[in-house]
Amino acid sequence: MDKIKLNFINQSADTNNSSVVIFQQNVAEDFGEIAIAWKVIQNCGRLDNHPFNYPMSFDVSASDSYGNYTPQLTASNGEAFDMVKDTSGDILQLSSVPATSANEVEVRNNLATGAINANCYRDGKLLAAKTGLAPGQKAVFEFQPKIYIGVVSQIEEGDVMNSAIISQINSQINLFGITSADIVMTGGGPGKNSVPFNFTLENINK
Image 1 (tube, rainbow, N blue to C red):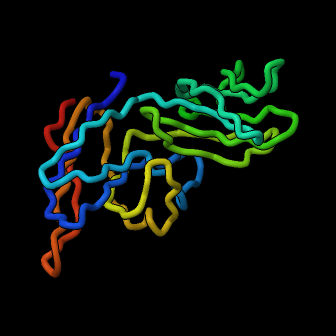
Image 2: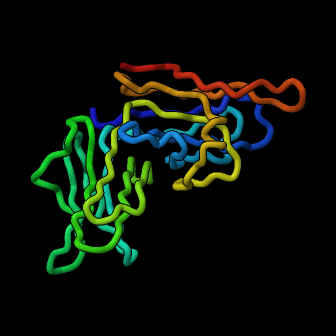
């Protein structure tokens, strides 16, 4: 199984045309205070649906202090990638030295000078980042098969979300062992009759 097929369905009573954000937490580091908006579903009206994929693998890329971005390389658990300078300039390459943990992926700054940013992508969209890695430092990434989902305003894909935003999002969906499922949003509504939004998995295929 290389990806999980998911289908978001809006069955809420929302009348504010709310945006729905989906993100993951990098469990390899204590990133509890920030996360990146991996996917933002907008203008999805009542009873509309929004299909999307959750690939099991993710890609890594690095950017250097000159504003250059390396190609995205598919990463598997246990692999490490080194940012090095070769005759053409700064490049990111698979390392012959694996990551410290078999469950993690590392991006290392092996340049002599200059900081780098390490970026993770899933399904082509920015998932996580570690910025300002000095020479000799590394970023460590590990993601469990679970997503966080919630209703937000004024968030775009790729935005960094702070702890104040994240604290409002308490729906966690475990995708372990699933091949496809619907994510159904209920709740919401106008005025005093409003109830909290709720997200549940339905039509689950293992």
